[in-house]
Amino acid sequence: MPKTFLAFFLVLGSLKVSASMPPKPYVLDSHGKPVYESPRSICGANDMLPMFQQSEDMKEMGTPIGIYEALIDGGTGYCTGTLITKDLFLTAEHCAAECEDIKVTFGYLRDGRQEDFKCKQIVEKGDGKFENDYFIIRLEGNPGVKWGWYNVSAEPLPASSKLLMIHHPQGTPMKVSQENCSLVAEDSGFLRHHCDTQPGSSGSAILLPNYQNPEQTRIVGVHTLGGCDDEETTSNSGPSMRHLVEISPTLKSLAK
Image (cartoon, rainbow, N blue to C red; front, top):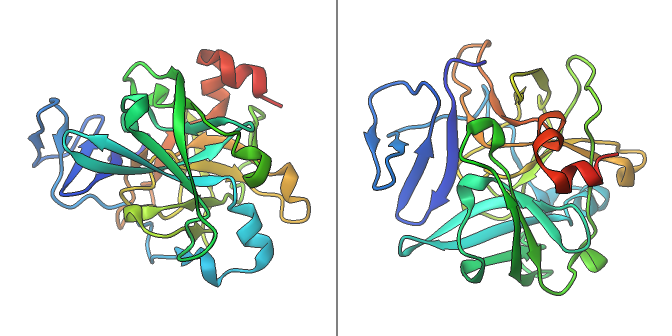
């Protein structure tokens, strides 16, 4: 496990961060969670690229990815998530809010193709443990019919697998973490990786990409925790799908 774990949920006007064995200094927010002054989750150089500058094939790979927006404690919180069926949306449990306070937008590259969907039902969520940090909601209107979805996979990953993350760091238009985005290890229910992230990336699918056959791209984890610093031994991380299928009836039923 990396020395430093930081979970990011970007809230307009404040940054909420939770951690396991957190480094100091920190203060506790109104929910008793530690808040850090300067969390870091860029692994070395910042290799995130704007999606609108990418190829049409890469843009298509980003269509199942949505920016998750919720009203939290009088502010607007932002995370990222992914369609896993025509109407089920997977993100992080620490992003959870009441269903009526949740909206998901697809196609937020900069301008143009964008579409909002409201939450219809909260299906499942974790129990507050870091390794169980997942949240599944059902969206109105079957957005996957238009935007597509990714299947989940509980298969073991080869060492140093190349990964892909498509997300909305800082609540901004879609970014791609591809360069130097790779598996570090799977252990204790976590998938540790070196994909660049920022607050607002929480809930992003950690993807095992197939660029020749994009429909065969699989979700192998959910990003929830930062932790990269200047040392090569640290990493970002989140629950692995191999672990989540053991605790989630929905994900188990969908695993390929």
